[in-house]
Image 1 (cartoon, rainbow, N blue to C red):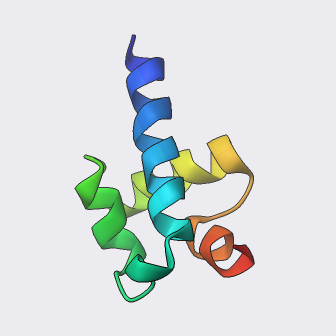
Image 2 (image 1 turned 90 degrees about the vertical axis):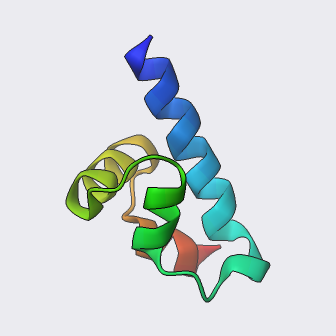
Length: 61
């Protein structure tokens, strides 16, 4: 169950990172908005799920 919740939070963060209307919102703020307030933990989990850090993922979008 925890894995499913984590996956959903990370998927929502990925959508937010691709959203051009949120381009000025810091990556840490996006993590916090999806319930992952620890910046290092968010980056680590996101990288494991998507193969790139949140910042690199955003820049590639």
